[in-house]
Image (cartoon, rainbow, N blue to C red; front, side):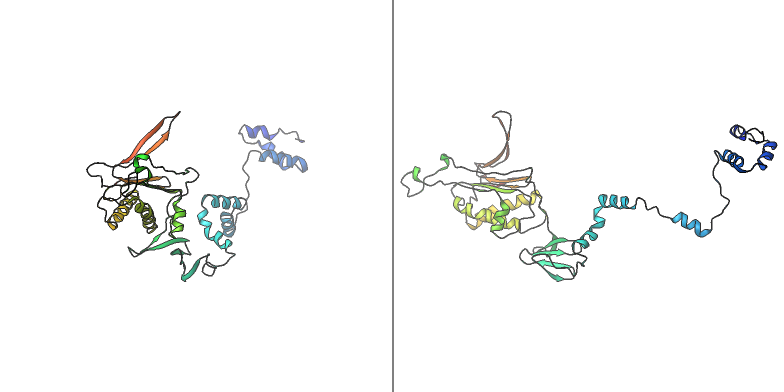
Length: 327
């Protein structure tokens, strides 16, 4: 310093107290020398203010919100939990109109507080939750409509069928077996959803794509193939459309067997329906067969080889009329 006293900084770094002469010299300093020495004394020390905050100031500082990242937090919350903002988005899409006063969707009409009804599709919609329900007349309760999954990106369907010459049988009154019509019939429906639209029944609760392949053959005492080819698929579509909830594999097999049995009973055919029916509903394959019919799946292997797996095989001898189903 200007007065010739040793600098207090080395003494402070070694952790010893300042000598009395240095303190006396510090009291006599003015101007820049005093400020320089104060900076050295404050080095490596925790700032301290003798001012005490009031209770209101302490509450304000403790409850003060940091708003610099509020927008980021809101964006992150919307990304991770979008369902929390569903009502806000619905409010914006309706132009700020309350759901109870907004115009009903196309085909729906308001039938009560918070409920809409589609007469053609026999469908109810709850406005608050946007759920769709249907009335199950068998049980007398309202059930939620199942939404079928679209698997068209992973599964493509193409169908075809042909009749072998050995399946042709002579018909009474025909001149020869070569001019006789084929006694077996096959039916291929590559899009059951379009077929359901033609019969004006709902089929949207089943997965896509959906297809049907059926083969009916002539057997003594069985339903004629021509009749089976005209009746079975229509009866099956209506039965599947009658329940618009989730279908289990067991329930689908029961319906297949029951439809074929009911058609045979109506035609008074004691031998039932001879042949096989296969349904593809998304990723599920259902088959029912009788009278020696079988269904197999062939997987392509390298070269011309194929891996053939039998899904279901019915008996051709005793018990041929028994329907065997698999999923």
